[in-house]
Length: 111
Length: 112
Image (cartoon, rainbow over all chains, first blue to last red; front, side, top):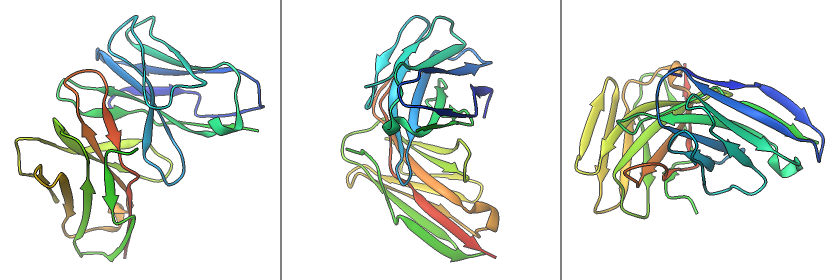
């Protein structure tokens, strides 16, 4: 997936716990994105970043925070996990040609 | 609401047949893209067609775009079992940053 990695691959949380998902790219792209994918649905944009130090809200930002302190890394945080946040989370970058490349995903279960 | 909507939701064909999937969208776009997702994996970019293009080919893939009807189609010719996957269209409505919107996808099953 063109050098986009995600950590961890799987995680189980209890309601109210917090966690951080890490997305890393080994290229030099400005734009990075966090999506969630629920069964039978397409991807929904949570937050995105157009460069180091910048973040913006997507379609479904509630309950999540993000940070882009380094250009290569985009962090997604859940401060107080809820069962509704059970999902598969994908990170992506956009090339200059506007194609998106995705990481392998993080499967999160909140009990 | 979703910008892109794929049709059909599911498609089952025999190996060697052609598979056609359609995508409709609602607002003006800069480009439209198709992605493939194998079960449990990330999405893989297949092809991008810009708003001023009508047709594009890549190997066994053929994509058409009709901006007057706000629709696109993806044709996979001579399908193989390895083409079994979900296929998503995504519309790009921004010159920078975000506004990629994905449809719910078409699940394609190619039977050997």
